[in-house]
Image (cartoon, rainbow, N blue to C red; front, side, top):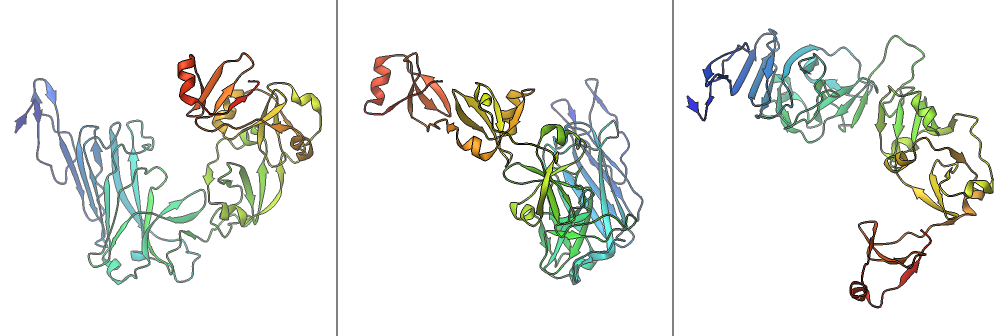
Length: 373
């Protein structure tokens, strides 16, 4: 059927090869389908404008279905689903793999690199006959290679009577291995027993030695056993440039005992010379301040600190830092007057010049704060 120069083709079940039909010298297939059965893996090749359906059935009668809307991918993507035996031991009492299988979803771009994500979330459904005998604690988990642990997938729909679990992912590159696990209490993280390196330690939170963890205050720590060390400088952090930084709850970081900083010989000094305009000071707790007019201004984020790239940061003691007056922090709508007598109003965190007396009269009765910058 032809419609607006598009050729709409019915899905070709069990076949994912090219179908070429021309309309005004344009070859288009609006919807593609791939159906694999009995461990015969059939990939789905999906273009940006296409809808797609991938259905893969395995020898144990389990099945994975993936449904894509048009525009789900940002570039041509090849997807496939395979199955392997669940061979690792779960370190959570009473936990087991439903069906004893792990499902591997692969999404690759034309360069055979892992696809970054989806523009529109697909619908993925796992059908497991054994799910009918599982408890309500059963849930979908993905395997995190860095942490060597299974993490619960949020916002899933568990339908035990129909033996299926449904979810809509945005990313797959970090969630390529899936399993349905029935575990008492349905924990968020389930560690696995590791083999090979007897020196490796896995913490109770599921992160292995050498993992980088970051809390709500944006400080980054490296963990070893039950201890953590603060990575106190950017040069020190660059040594771990290829490692993943895990954003974790503060309660996770609190479960580790602090054991120094990296670099270990970091020194804190007292010197008034650091009060020159534009100086950057770091306190022992890692906070960084900018000096302006002999007052300190806290720099709350890495994005703001980026503006001072290449500038030296001097480590100072709390005693010295506390001796420096904090610059005033103004709220929305405050009026401020600089040394040149110009008056500004604070809007959305920035100063907006009040250019006329008639405009200033709109703020009659409000206090005007004198500032030096």
